[in-house]
Image 1 (cartoon, rainbow, N blue to C red):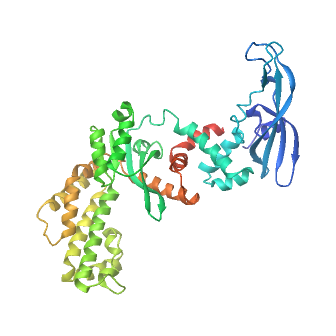
Image 2: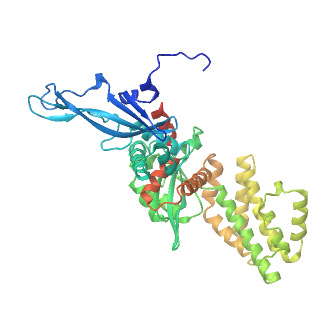
Length: 438
């Protein structure tokens, strides 16, 4: 702001009280906190009886204490003087309505809750750190954030509007001594497809199975299901079956990452099998195949001259022929996806699938398994080339952000809390929060 327009200094505006219809009447500043005494603005006094409409008689005041936005790096507390009235006609007694200042029985002002949400969603702070900044208890802050997030985001009836491209994947939300706890995450990939913004988390459902995803789809409105055009997924057959049964008109798209991962897994299993057959033990330092384990999974066009020479020297050995053939198929799949011409890339990958569908020697066990999988999901694999922008990559990105969230919170025990926190963190809440902070 090169030439700002100055106005008369206002403590109410500086302390973010004007939006709450409060005015400061006193202050007490201590080393570790500050207290602001406030009253409601005169024009917003609630002095009329709601029963008979008569004007009430003042009957003194009561003090309501609310945690406010920290000012000057100090936790700030509001002492709001609430006027009490008595109706001379019907003898009804009431207090001023402070709903605009804070929710009923809440311990945080609405400005403090929005400040906490901003710290959580935009600044990626932990609840503990936010509570320390506010000078409030952890449970007080956590309850306020989850309640407001539930109201603004989860209970929003338009949250599922306009979804045309879905992404689905599994996610570990909790590690226990008795095994990991899985959930199914459903992502809205429509903004990625339309190039209008990032993907957003739609929902998290406990479990990972066909039944879980099928039940979730069946619970959605008919308008939502009719609007879904594509579903990006990995190689799990359960998600494919659920999508086919509930959304027969939607096109399943198998993500390139998982197709390449399947081919890379075939290379790894082949290398390990040949390692055992030739040397009789698992890979060790100095073993030829073990030494090129990472080079085998690198794209051929990204290899250095030294890596290429080393790779060729190892694969040239007769006992490593099966690894060489499997690696060559893997490189063909990678090259098909990297082809700048999507039509040509589709034809190249279709050719690879056709070559693996029949005539593969029985000795190449890994390629046989890969060929069966690609043949069964050929339509889903090739659909990627006809629908640019439909990929499960953004779904994996959101999974990564959920991992970061779990680490920041040092783990979760309550799945409901985890769902709310995940939706706040990755559910497209930032634009909505910015609009409330203006």
